[in-house]
Image 1 (cartoon, helix red, strand yellow):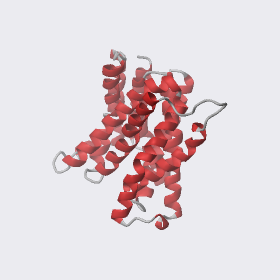
Image 2 (cartoon, helix red, strand yellow):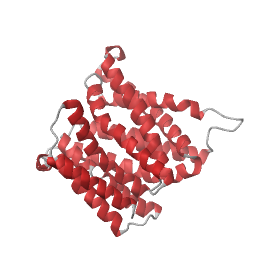
Image 3 (tube, one colour):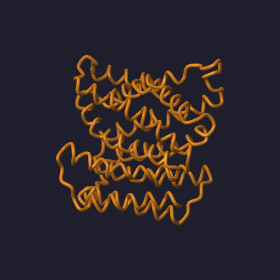
Image 4 (cartoon, one colour):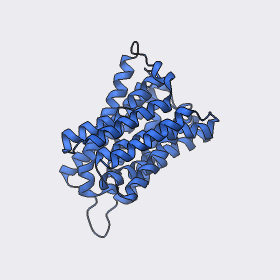
Length: 293
């Protein structure tokens, strides 16, 4: 993998790891779909300058590509964020975190089926090592707290959201190769924000949510989610996707749980465990093995 792609992925995963803390702060002051809508509107505003016509060239893609970008935005923004956020209201955090482990596996399988990327033994072993590493980071209590009964609705929504992200990654690669990572990400984000405006408005109206009630801390968290995660991290993810295989990009998602644990140690004062150290080492070994597959 090119060094620039690797650096872009690591930076994106660091931002996404911190996003869990920011999301928790934001959800303390606003309902979930309103948070998603606000973060997408902020990130869309960041992308608008790159969508303006330059040097007399058309900025809007042709009809065929525009429809593909609209479908891509529905998969990776509206459906992924929306289903995951709503699903978390009906299932446990432990269930959701364990299901999230399947994301790179989903990408691995979908990229083989839809893009013809080869699943080598080394790639499969690398993903397997990373899965074991993530489970070690989470700790045995997370695995043993998996509850299969009473959370079917939430579990299904979270799993479907993971499939949406897998499809977003796999279908995003061809259009990224055609029009470039920056334009593809910009259009996906702007269209995704438009998808979410009526959804956020309906939720705010039904719950009585008022923007005036947001605290400065909540606005800061939402701004970080919009600028740091939906804008910068997604852009870096697409930049890496343009430069290497989607399977190799997907496995980097396994670095997020160890990074989140480190953030919790630094920000929340949690203790560094042996599982964190060993699990993080296995994740990085799995990522390195998959890269070389």
